[in-house]
Length: 125
Image (cartoon, rainbow, N blue to C red; front, side):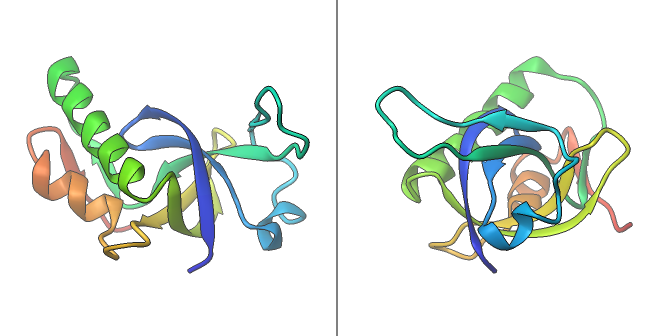
């Protein structure tokens, strides 16, 4: 899978990711976020993404915060890089993506469903 760079974690299943060049021309109509930072010369687009195959069953701020923190820790260990495969665009204009830790190969979907099963469950489309 190609690499992408996570610039923002909204919650454990919604992230803003700079995607590889091969996807840029294909997904011009997807919601984006400018990922440039002060002092950077190169500007990139970050695409609104949602993790494929996992959904939240209930709202629990404490567990959601813990899940977000575990995703952020995983991202910290890989310096923000993730392996990404775009599946499709949902009705809200987000890329639905399969995401894996490039270091361990662990999928975000499995991590969330296994470690935070109180609110996240896997599903098949």
